[in-house]
Length: 258
Image 1 (tube, rainbow, N blue to C red):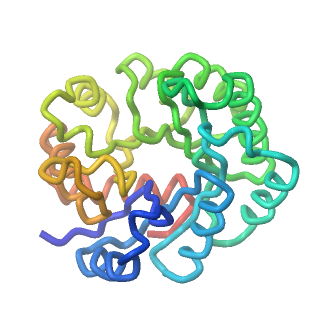
Image 2 (image 1 turned 90 degrees about the vertical axis):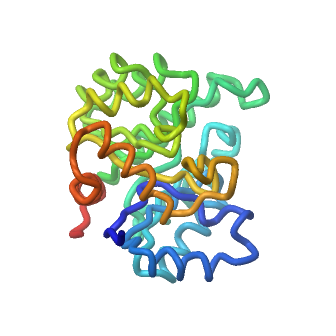
């Protein structure tokens, strides 16, 4: 089955694609992928995301500093991100947010400060945000609420139905990954069941988070088909309907004509 797929979160700048990046991008286009939002996590990743967006028509870039690297956001890096964000193919500030899972991450107050600075930049430039939230639901929501004019997506959503509803109330979309295909994925299945279709996005987070039957292997955008099939099954709609709706949703968020 060939669908017009938009991958709302990918990392083709990752070293896992260094050997065959061009070939993989050619193959995903042949498989029906019509759009990819490549998200920077470091300043190098942001630069590479922009290069990919300039090279390939189907690629768009998000630029930002991931919470794991929150201590890298000095004045020079901030100004470079701001300059990149004015490029016509940069459609969001991201991947930004909070990650309290790894103890070796920068201190929470550093993460929060970096998050707020990038939220303020998104507000200033009128761009949406791509938010990473791991084990930090309460503080993530608190900071989202401080910037009511900013909209975006909670990428790789991992919260409860209740938290999902709070995020929807703030005007956010939820990004659904291959986790929804895993046998033990009860929580995210409940979220997909409860959340309206016009608030769901579909993403790979490739090269990570490959869906069943590729779990544990390198992920890529055409594997979204398996995520769409699972989401369609949960919602009781066709795969085509789910694909079309999620593509329409990412178009609305990024202000793209798809």
